[in-house]
Image (cartoon, rainbow, N blue to C red; front, side):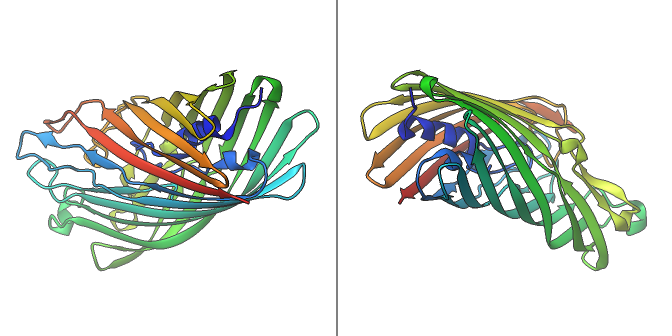
Length: 351
């Protein structure tokens, strides 16, 4: 049986939608569009609202801030075998600041934008290969009051890394079994290297380097019957490679995640009628003991509820994700009860 758009949109939401990540990961590319028939465009929007704070020692306020992301995708069917897509999204990011005695004065802002061009080719045996180039623009602003050595008179470490463009690629392979409504795939994203023109301590010019991590994602979906779709994915990201060193401090690391990121999700989509379907997704992030004042979380679970509406050429997907972070203790401060609530919306038009 062939799974219809109403159910498959749930899988799209799981793979490219609203998850609030503990690492720098934000939105993934909606590569599922490459398997839709015809031509289409899609606009997406998310607004994560995290709340993570600590006691005692005067507290910190919420060290993670609300932010908004947006994306655009265009897909064209060139012929029966070849599909082409252009994607614009925000792959990485961070927004946080803190006040109080425990982590006061720390701020971190990472902004990025990605433009990707991807081609998919389908063979006779329902195996598809796909790949393309990614251009990633990233900038970093941060302040750390407890990093500078005594030689700097106790000054807060400041970094302003101007926008830099890095080039990477993605490649993948997928297998379909149409009569069972099944598809399984594996996708690799390469690392992206940056060399920023930077200013440290507000006045010291420097060149700061960073490597955005490579990743590997395995995903699959299977129609349980004509109205129900089971889907899921697992992702590994090489965050042990993401180290931000300070030239002004002799190359000392000011950000070092140290551990890789592993996430997974599983969900169900259910068709209600020819216009409506609903879906639910449970996701999980592995603990890695890598918590810090810049990342006061370590693993967690989430639940996403959403619905799809389709009428003619218009397709709309919306919902909300609730995320609960594991409790951690950093420097005598207990970060407990951390959560994130993320509404999301996708609007598509086929032609």
